[in-house]
Image (cartoon, rainbow, N blue to C red):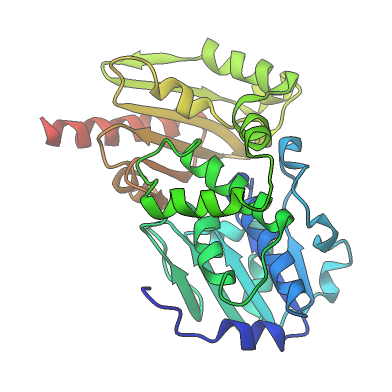
Length: 319
């Protein structure tokens, strides 16, 4: 939507229980968004709590973790539920039921495939990240500080890969500059979230490269749950694999599939020219034109074969 028609300040400031959550296996944009929103909500006198799954330790420097809910989930009765960085309600995973219990719901996102599933949908598909959208919202009623700026900058850097992706706009760069003015260590943030790796990440990355293959101009790899465990890693240690293999010379599309659960696989897609959002939508997923993903009910090999077939169909149309 082009304008924020809802008086967000009035609703949030008068609410006793605001629950803020994001998608399963949260990335830097999701993490930065929920904590920036929590800190902003607290700053205007609201009482926010954050529901979030375990995430990579590389993001431990982000402040606001005191808002993570540690009580009995059965006791949680939200007045307001804010879903961030979720293209659909089911992306909330185990926290979806709390969305349905709230009196007022918000959906804050930047994915063009968003299903506008809340009462109040603030979905800016031209934005680089959900953190960019969050900035546009909270700048109107919140006094930003260094900690909020760090969270927002982290999300923007993560989803643009250091202001590299074509989703980066003039506005994105201007917001980044404004956040730097708060005295954040922007160089250190980029190092932590884009370049530094744990031993677990290196081991699982190595295994993914062992499984790597090329089919014409498509690069792809996959990991089973057993392979991830053998590396001492978890799903939160898989960032960067699909982006890395896209950078191979002559590659137009990259695919990374991993086993997420019992007969459930996660598909990640990146592209230099094909519309992978369209491909992901075939499997009930979505995202952006050049970066998208989906869940697949089936094993890794079946998921990989299915998505490769769809990619080839799409690439054939462009020839």
